[in-house]
Length: 130
Image (cartoon, rainbow, N blue to C red; front, side):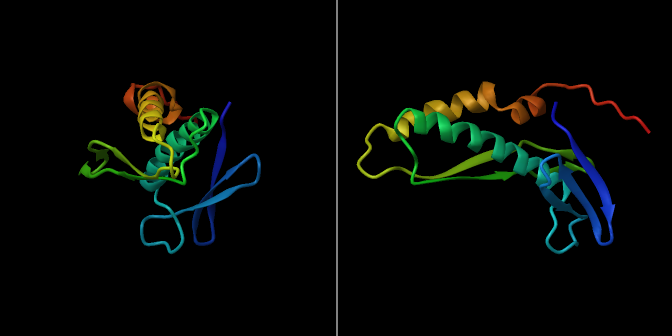
């Protein structure tokens, strides 16, 4: 089970996981804090990269740099348009197969293996208990 606790703080909100990691959450004006939408985008980018990296490395193709920018426009007050994940990669020097391996692995991860991406692509039930 995945679980985080979100709680109000003196200057906004924070998410805390069971390992003690904390992320500040704000409304877009809070210095040093992510908005909830930014956290959603970070979760998608993080899910893809932490899945792609070990799979390419296991195949002997560790990227010199592996990063991604995740973007989405608000198309309505409470609705995002298409989310785009753009990879920023520096291939390992002298590795002629790294680009093909990266593209194949990244596509499989995006299409099937990223839990966050799958949650965004398919309708999911979200319950609320107050």
